[in-house]
Length: 138
Image (tube, rainbow, N blue to C red; front, side):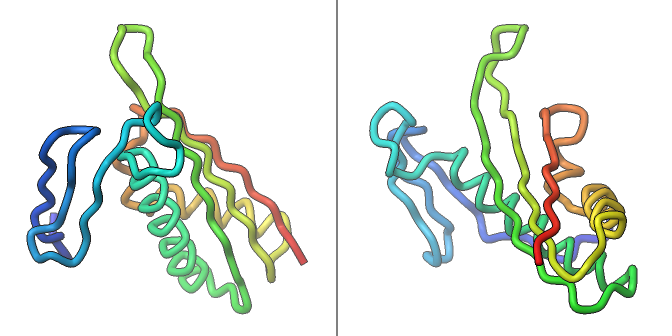
Protein backbone atom coordinates (compact mmCIF):
# COMPACT_ATOMS: atom_id res chain seq x y z
CA UNK A 1 0.00 0.00 0.00
CA UNK A 2 1.27 3.45 -0.86
CA UNK A 3 1.14 5.61 2.30
CA UNK A 4 0.02 9.22 1.71
CA UNK A 5 0.12 10.45 5.29
CA UNK A 6 1.10 9.39 8.79
CA UNK A 7 0.18 11.14 12.02
CA UNK A 8 2.73 12.18 14.58
CA UNK A 9 3.01 9.52 17.28
CA UNK A 10 0.06 9.55 19.68
CA UNK A 11 0.87 8.44 23.21
CA UNK A 12 -1.51 7.62 26.04
CA UNK A 13 -0.59 7.34 29.70
CA UNK A 14 -3.04 6.30 32.40
CA UNK A 15 -5.56 4.72 30.02
CA UNK A 16 -9.10 6.06 30.04
CA UNK A 17 -8.44 8.21 33.11
CA UNK A 18 -5.10 9.53 31.88
CA UNK A 19 -3.80 11.76 29.11
CA UNK A 20 -3.32 11.32 25.37
CA UNK A 21 -1.27 13.65 23.17
CA UNK A 22 0.51 13.92 19.85
CA UNK A 23 4.28 14.06 20.05
CA UNK A 24 4.41 17.30 18.02
CA UNK A 25 2.34 19.06 20.72
CA UNK A 26 -0.47 20.00 18.32
CA UNK A 27 -3.22 18.17 20.22
CA UNK A 28 -3.70 16.57 23.61
CA UNK A 29 -6.52 15.65 25.98
CA UNK A 30 -7.05 14.60 29.56
CA UNK A 31 -9.29 11.56 29.30
CA UNK A 32 -12.29 10.50 31.34
CA UNK A 33 -14.24 7.28 31.38
CA UNK A 34 -17.87 7.55 30.24
CA UNK A 35 -18.96 7.11 33.86
CA UNK A 36 -16.81 9.98 35.17
CA UNK A 37 -18.27 12.88 33.23
CA UNK A 38 -20.38 12.87 30.10
CA UNK A 39 -18.81 16.17 28.99
CA UNK A 40 -15.22 14.89 29.22
CA UNK A 41 -13.23 13.39 26.36
CA UNK A 42 -13.01 9.64 25.86
CA UNK A 43 -11.70 7.47 23.00
CA UNK A 44 -15.18 6.81 21.60
CA UNK A 45 -15.86 10.55 21.24
CA UNK A 46 -12.52 11.03 19.49
CA UNK A 47 -13.29 8.10 17.16
CA UNK A 48 -16.75 9.52 16.37
CA UNK A 49 -15.23 12.87 15.44
CA UNK A 50 -12.58 11.25 13.25
CA UNK A 51 -15.06 8.95 11.51
CA UNK A 52 -17.52 11.80 10.81
CA UNK A 53 -14.77 14.00 9.35
CA UNK A 54 -13.23 11.19 7.31
CA UNK A 55 -16.54 10.00 5.87
CA UNK A 56 -17.66 13.53 5.01
CA UNK A 57 -14.36 14.20 3.24
CA UNK A 58 -14.53 10.91 1.34
CA UNK A 59 -18.09 11.79 0.33
CA UNK A 60 -16.87 15.04 -1.22
CA UNK A 61 -14.25 13.19 -3.26
CA UNK A 62 -16.69 10.51 -4.39
CA UNK A 63 -19.24 13.16 -5.44
CA UNK A 64 -16.55 14.78 -7.60
CA UNK A 65 -15.65 11.41 -9.17
CA UNK A 66 -19.34 10.79 -9.86
CA UNK A 67 -19.50 14.27 -11.44
CA UNK A 68 -22.24 15.39 -9.06
CA UNK A 69 -22.10 19.17 -8.83
CA UNK A 70 -23.65 21.33 -6.12
CA UNK A 71 -23.68 18.57 -3.51
CA UNK A 72 -23.39 19.60 0.11
CA UNK A 73 -23.20 17.23 3.04
CA UNK A 74 -23.13 16.92 6.79
CA UNK A 75 -22.00 13.70 8.43
CA UNK A 76 -22.57 12.90 12.09
CA UNK A 77 -21.33 9.83 13.93
CA UNK A 78 -22.54 8.22 17.14
CA UNK A 79 -20.20 5.60 18.58
CA UNK A 80 -21.44 3.16 21.19
CA UNK A 81 -19.36 0.92 23.43
CA UNK A 82 -20.72 -2.39 24.59
CA UNK A 83 -19.94 -6.01 25.38
CA UNK A 84 -19.81 -8.56 22.56
CA UNK A 85 -20.97 -12.17 22.80
CA UNK A 86 -17.43 -13.38 23.60
CA UNK A 87 -17.22 -11.15 26.68
CA UNK A 88 -14.96 -8.53 25.08
CA UNK A 89 -15.73 -4.92 24.38
CA UNK A 90 -16.93 -3.77 20.97
CA UNK A 91 -17.96 -0.62 19.15
CA UNK A 92 -21.31 0.07 17.52
CA UNK A 93 -21.65 2.95 15.07
CA UNK A 94 -24.42 4.99 13.46
CA UNK A 95 -23.49 7.42 10.68
CA UNK A 96 -26.06 10.07 9.81
CA UNK A 97 -25.47 11.62 6.39
CA UNK A 98 -27.48 14.64 5.27
CA UNK A 99 -27.17 15.58 1.61
CA UNK A 100 -28.55 18.34 -0.55
CA UNK A 101 -28.24 18.90 -4.28
CA UNK A 102 -28.90 15.25 -5.16
CA UNK A 103 -31.87 12.97 -5.73
CA UNK A 104 -32.70 10.10 -3.37
CA UNK A 105 -31.25 7.65 -5.90
CA UNK A 106 -28.03 9.65 -6.28
CA UNK A 107 -27.74 9.99 -2.51
CA UNK A 108 -28.01 6.23 -2.03
CA UNK A 109 -25.34 5.53 -4.66
CA UNK A 110 -23.10 8.28 -3.28
CA UNK A 111 -23.26 7.02 0.32
CA UNK A 112 -22.79 3.36 -0.67
CA UNK A 113 -19.74 4.23 -2.78
CA UNK A 114 -18.32 6.47 -0.05
CA UNK A 115 -18.65 3.62 2.45
CA UNK A 116 -16.40 1.53 0.17
CA UNK A 117 -13.81 4.35 -0.13
CA UNK A 118 -13.65 5.83 3.39
CA UNK A 119 -10.59 4.59 5.33
CA UNK A 120 -12.53 4.42 8.61
CA UNK A 121 -15.30 2.35 6.96
CA UNK A 122 -12.69 0.04 5.48
CA UNK A 123 -10.95 -0.29 8.86
CA UNK A 124 -14.06 -1.38 10.75
CA UNK A 125 -15.86 -3.37 8.04
CA UNK A 126 -16.64 -6.91 9.18
CA UNK A 127 -15.70 -6.14 12.78
CA UNK A 128 -17.99 -3.31 13.88
CA UNK A 129 -21.72 -2.88 13.30
CA UNK A 130 -22.13 0.31 11.25
CA UNK A 131 -25.50 1.62 10.17
CA UNK A 132 -25.74 4.30 7.48
CA UNK A 133 -28.68 6.69 7.74
CA UNK A 134 -29.06 8.87 4.64
CA UNK A 135 -31.36 11.87 4.42
CA UNK A 136 -31.80 14.21 1.47
CA UNK A 137 -32.65 17.75 2.54
CA UNK A 138 -33.57 20.84 0.54
